[in-house]
Amino acid sequence: MTKIDEPRLESDLGYRFGYVAGFMGFGPDDIAAIHGAAPLLAPLVPGLVDAVYDKLFQQDATWRHFLPRQYGYDGNVSDTLEHLTMDHAQITFRKQHLGRYLAALVTRPYDAKMVEYLDMVGKMHTPKAGSKDLNVPLVQMNALMGFVSDALTATVLGLNLPRDTEARTLRAFGKLLWIQNDLITRHYQAA
Image (tube, rainbow, N blue to C red):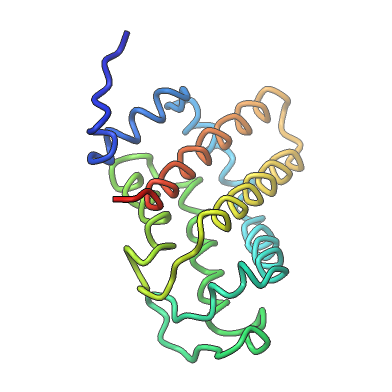
């Protein structure tokens, strides 16, 4: 039986990642499957990004989080949801961030820097990092992650990979997105 330092799970990001990844069996073979899909997925990233933003645009509960100035964005911001269109400069800026995130998932090594990046993805959707005005409720983050997971699954299924490669790739992404979800939800816990 492995002894787990439970308080350390809350204070040591690397330890937490190692625990969650190990518990799920996310390892080198999964990373290889994810990286192996990169050449096929890269051209599809813009379509995935558009699908995510089309979904976000459908709900005022999700779209309203794009009204506050996003960290790193210096352009004009919209004052109302009605004026925040899909072609607004701030939305273009945010879509670029999502595209880079998806590219990072399939290209970067899963080292300490990547773990910090995945953790920051969760943190930046709260007032704890980035914009103090940005506070996306956990229910919206969970809905988004579920949508991204399904969209990614549909995309991988559409690649017509050999069955064993397809299964390995889907399982690897499934584990990865659960890890990402843990690194999101940890920032919603009461301190």
